Image 1 (cartoon, rainbow, N blue to C red):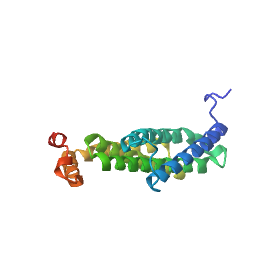
Image 2 (cartoon, rainbow, N blue to C red):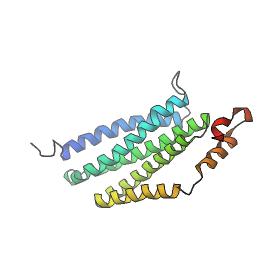
Image 3 (cartoon, helix red, strand yellow):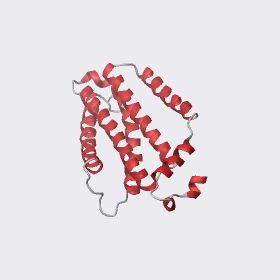
Image 4 (tube, one colour):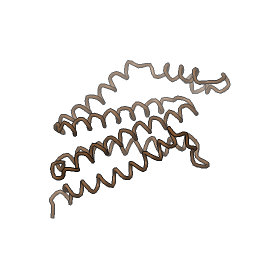
Length: 191
């Protein structure tokens, strides 16, 4: 019995094949709605579409990064592992982009809020993180260096965001987007 709970090059290969097929189908469905102007399913609003997709896709992308780090020791066991891992990380990066598009549709319908602004920032961070993971997998850099870079990107974003006026940005966006003054949620805007 393998001491790593049954994880080996073969199990990682089968997992990556299954993950790529599932994410490929999801990507096709998402981009047919987002870029192909396909209609939302009956009874689904942009709010439901964003909530069902943006946040789960973001969590999926974060799990993809963690799996990529865990799968790296097995990449030399089979020639197809590295290309499949690169494809999977690439698909997850596209799904992060899809989550941003979903959230933008939602913001276009219902306006910008603090939570939506922070969600956009977090999704962007996850996308950047996946690109960094992809670079490390292709260049075969150490996992410690990868984690250090990801932490630096996260803390750097937090530090830089302390200098940004989110309230002013949200207020300006809300007023600019409004078609008339009656459609503005003044109580939220004034808070």
